[in-house]
Length: 418
Image (tube, rainbow, N blue to C red; front, side, top):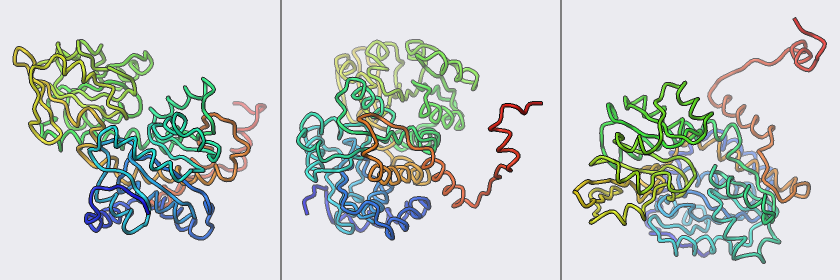
């Protein structure tokens, strides 16, 4: 079995951490037990490009339990947990190609190694696997029956591919599931981003001026958690509806250049490029901390900052100090990559339980329905979304009401009114 991980001797520690995460993933556990019996993925080859975390390990084992052959690589150079990668290779016999801190060359080499399986299904987090497959492995596309995408960033890229007519197979946007983006993006990104900032800096949040760039579901979550820790939260936005929502949620809203003058901590969560530009760095005060929780490191203009700086040094693990000509210092966390995965452990397993339950069930859906699907991006089927929600509520011991026949009739009629 081919693989490329940092150190197999880390496997024992990784196995324990995978077991710890599994305790908070009851929905995926139920699906795994069902998959073991039915083998709905028997004979299916799956290439996955995801953050190599304890939660991802549980997804990989679920897919394998369903009969699939699986390979895994990292969807970000800094998001791999090396002990988890080792454990998957040693104990689960799953080929993994991922090392935390790998350079771009190794990152794409690992993506190509993952595609050597000649996949039937791709499972992506950011669309790097899909784009590489389309650019470099066109001969492999004929084997692919469908794919899934985990992130907002990836869905944007894939919809662009579909609109331009270059997408070669159907993709299910797992990110769009209610049980994914309402929970994973908001509560998962919110908590794990703050966790990453605190681990990297050990700075006090209370009283800090905390700037969140973007008020999508991830931005909402980050703002909520920062506010809960006593920070004064400022939102920057380009969408008038989201800016209005942020205002009515009680946050200050202003352009990024105004926020740049007063912010202590900046977090980008937009999915777009150069959200914090070179001009912003010129306006920032000494000691400003800048980080990103969007999928790619393009949200911060690091090249622009490098051009301004007269010196750079790593002052703490995951904290790089840029000193500008007049002595002003700007601190960039985690190389501008996902701070919640570079300096922390990513989303808590309780929310990834729902996201990865969607992934597993969507893989089964693709196997059953791929012949009916066009080369486009699809939302998660409503029945899958609701099934995940029901299983999660059941695991939490929560019961809900059901409609009476009279109530159902009322909702489907037009004759009845006041």
